[in-house]
Image 1 (cartoon, rainbow, N blue to C red):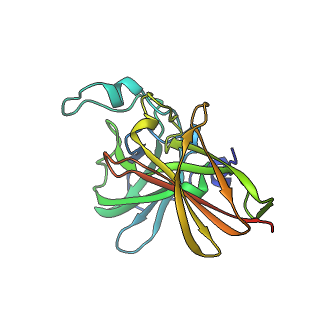
Image 2: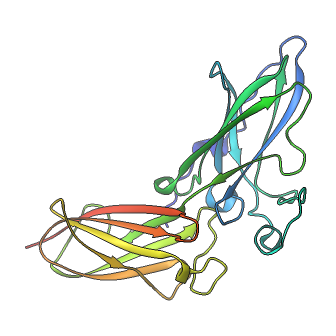
Image 3: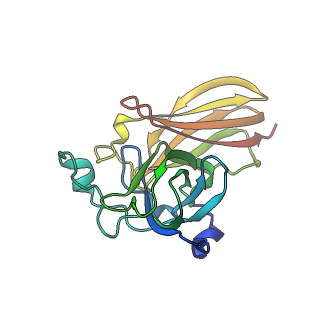
Amino acid sequence: MRLLTCVLALCAPLTFHASAGAVPTELTVRVIAKDGLFVGTMAGGVRITVKDAESGELLAQGIAEGSVGNIGRILKTARSRGVLLSDADSARFTTVLDLTEPRRIVVEAFGPLAYPASANTVSASQWLVPGKSVSDGDGWVLEMPGFFVEIDTPLQDEALDKGAVDLSVHVTMMCGCPVVPGGLWDAEQYEMAVILKRDGTLVGEEPLEYAGKQSQFKAALALEAGSYEAIVYAYDPVNGNTGVDRVSFTIAE
């Protein structure tokens, strides 16, 4: 798998000096994959940015890291109001803001950082009052939609001989959780296919098949000479969750 090392993941969160009369106010942000678990270290973390909603002033920035959480608690157990999703080690970003008055802030999450081609951005805003932390319980939880979809072969701009082309694709949830037939994230529930364009013209769509290995899918394509773009998607018809990757390559005469 092609992973991108995020420089921010190696750095400490940004910190700011308190002004006179400021009250320390703790903020914890967690990101959970749609129909999945917390997005954390296994998926490269999530970049969290905290800004003032009115002025745009940067208040804090860092990486949400940690474990994916408890599968049973998050996905298999009916929950009553107030029951926590997270454990102490569930992926999170925590910062302390020095507030002199109530401020409406915007939290933006970008990730997962290990999968930049499939990364999404989600954001939300709310008021913070000095000394009234948003950190207890699960903290502030944002949902990250999508699938991680990565085409392994063919490679970008690869030149291939005419005939059968083996398309190989890696698909997981945004938390990095595996997709397999009959699994908790059931490949048989999802629609996965490759849309093919030849010399800029749509030529067809082929379904992907399970390749016999966790989160790996494939299609054998019989292609004539030309310049191709393959657009692969994974789609969950139950909730609309969608992920996409694309690659361009050529078939020689």
